Image (tube, rainbow, N blue to C red; front, side):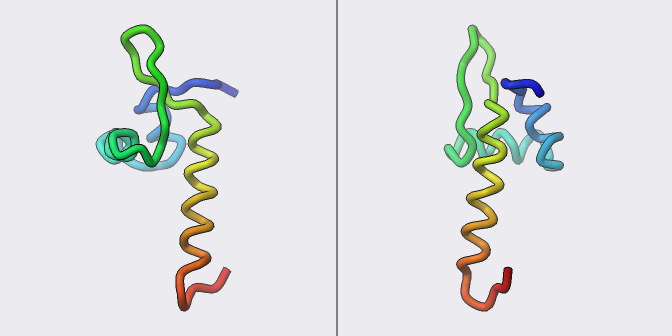
Length: 65
């Protein structure tokens, strides 16, 4: 498993577009780190993001898990 992903690689993992991935990073929904002049997304952040989505959606009224 790769520990740090480019935004493009992270987007592929989540099956979303590159622009959407950069939006998530910019808004702080997915944390990233700088390595030299490059921005990288820790793989663990993708897992944490998905877990937050599941938790948020399962707590919405009218939703069943």
